[in-house]
Length: 170
Image (cartoon, rainbow, N blue to C red; front, side, top):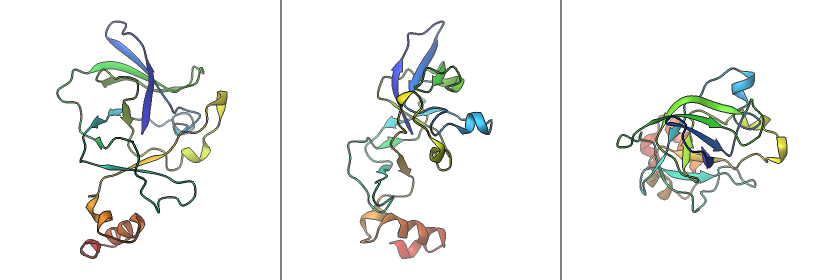
């Protein structure tokens, strides 16, 4: 999950967006592994998914209450989509995340979602050009009430679900 930090006026209905992570961070697999990513826009909804901010002290063992919005993974079906280029934050010309991706008009502070990103690539993030590695936010797609009914942390819920013991979670 990355946040838009700047945008530009459209040239022939094309938009350029700069996000707070790039090829010197979690997107280094674009350079080293020749991966491709699909940028998707998160829309704000108050009830779909809870976000978990990783604590440097205890990993995923604590759900943090934060001002981070709850996010909806649905595409923006009601909005017009525009050809867009998504750039990382640095001034390096290689710091391009996605070209010709269709996105709605975004505002500074809007969130983009990149599926299956960060688990292995964020470990190789650097502080190139003074940009520190970004905070990590995990979007939990299982129902948040699982966590509320347990005195144990979310890792126990995940372990039981992965072992096929979904009923024991409740």
